[in-house]
Length: 211
Image (cartoon, rainbow, N blue to C red; front, side, top):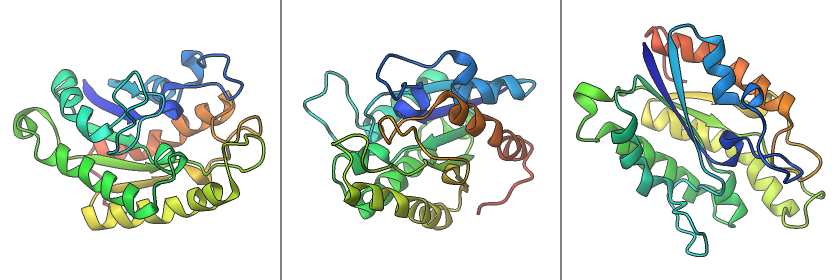
């Protein structure tokens, strides 16, 4: 049975836009992806507030994706594919696009050079660009942040080409909830899971090429 790691933040965890908790499993994109792929286990590793590779020392959890990823690779191996959807929290913390690009490149490097990669962790990586934020509903989301997030998919596509990994643009699937301008309504989370079925299947079958 193929094993896929879904590595992300609250968009992967399933955080509700109204802050009332977590979407049920039927509307969280990793679980939706798994239910549509026979013979595939999708391991959800979403953490609220996670960045690509940067610290938030005010948090009770370690939100630095680059620091925690090696442990998760060892925890969940063997892995046939790692799907990464990060970048929103980098922008939320006022980091520049170049910082997110460096962070994502570092995550790819970690996977490729993990000690157990040869026998347990496949060099098969999918970078997913999250839907951009919407300014207005949440006072913490400024127009500057929203504009930076709209430019993020193109930057992640560039990273995928430079790193020779596959790219998927979830910003083409829909936009976040108007409640907070960041998180997904259940319909969008489910739609992203279903949209990932074909590219993930193709990658697992070895028929896809880097974007």
